[in-house]
Image (cartoon, rainbow, N blue to C red; front, side, top):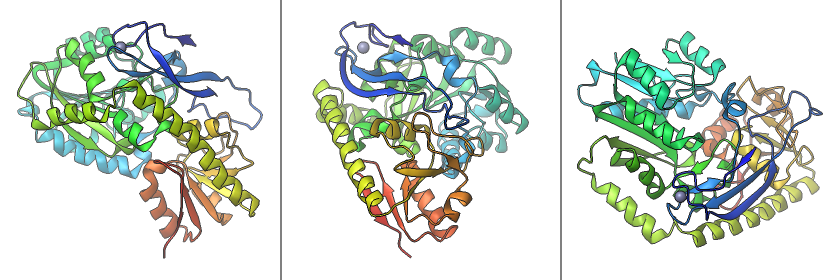
Amino acid sequence: MEKIKSCRICQNPNIVDFLDLGEQPFANSLLKGPDEEEAFYPLTLSWCPDCRLVQLNHTAEPADLFSSYIWVTATSEGAKEHARAFYWEIASRAESLKESYVLEVASNDGTFLKPFIENDFKVLGVDPAKNIADRAVTDGVPTLCKFFGAEEARGIIEECGRAGVVVARNVLPHVANLHDFVEGLHICLDDNGLLVVEFHYASVIYQGLHYDSIYHEHLCYYTLGSLERLLNQHGLFVTDITESPISGGSLVLYMKKKAAKEGPIVGTYREVEKTSRVNELDNWQSFAEHVYSHREQLLDILAEITVAGGPIAGYGASARSSTLLNFCGIDSGLVSVIADHNPLKQGHYTAGTRIPIASPEEVMKENPEYVVILAWNFADEIMRILRNKFSFRGQCILPLPNSPKVVKMVE
Ligand SMILES: [Zn+2]
């Protein structure tokens, strides 16, 4: 794994380390057996004094991470709901879209393109994971299986022309070759087209202590300030911003190719970022302090329950849970099993911490008294399932956001 020598956006060589989450395995590399060998890599963050980008210090080979991807968008009910809301938001902004088409980069299983298809829009997805792209195609969403960059973008416009809407949801943080990727977005976009970019907002990561979202796939943690600099450099200008619940708090930026009239909200975000100092180093150093003390608090809670008899089951073997479990050193001694709806994960073991993963039905059959909701950004949905489907009346541990909490299920 390669260590960067300068900032990923502006190439400033004086980036400053501020957080060390230890050596960790790839979050999505679940094990087939409890004794399978695995590799660990450094997981550390730094901050750039020039463009203010918060970024990972090491870059994994993309082919190792994304060629066979285990995250399937449609496994989350919340994502399907958000896809419909996302459709309406875009359809209300994009004029004369019917004559053009919607291009989604990193379209996963096509969940976000489906509402467009249902409303008679032409669409095209691009995704590098063959297993997921195949699934999208079988499901009726035309999808090219490839990584995306300027060269691929030229190929796409040669074949299909420029797109009236280009969507890049939760992909920019994954991209190592940033300038090439953003150039690709610019190439694909029609001159009057709308570019829509969604990303887990670094201000929310800071305020809610979402350190579990830091893993090898996420190379950059953007604020409006740091991302805008990159986009402007490639002739893309933010005209509006909305918020989305994805990842526990994301921003959606709407962009044009020409500096167009800005909605007032854009200036408000810039101002709030300035007053909250979210782009400054001292802010991120205090984030790091909170991360270390969060680990102590969570381990105290789990140890107390374990001494009192436990056992504790987990819910949601998400990629994010991998960082949390590995950083805190939580293994099957503390959390005996993790429930997950994704059949691709069931029967596997968590990376690094080797906790078995089973279907929710199997896990809840054992009547655990405590459930730690590892996929806490879906806590409402999971608690509803626990209550209604499994009649669970024990207690839930919500590790995040902020300090861990123990919540008694109410009738
Ligand atoms: Zn920089």
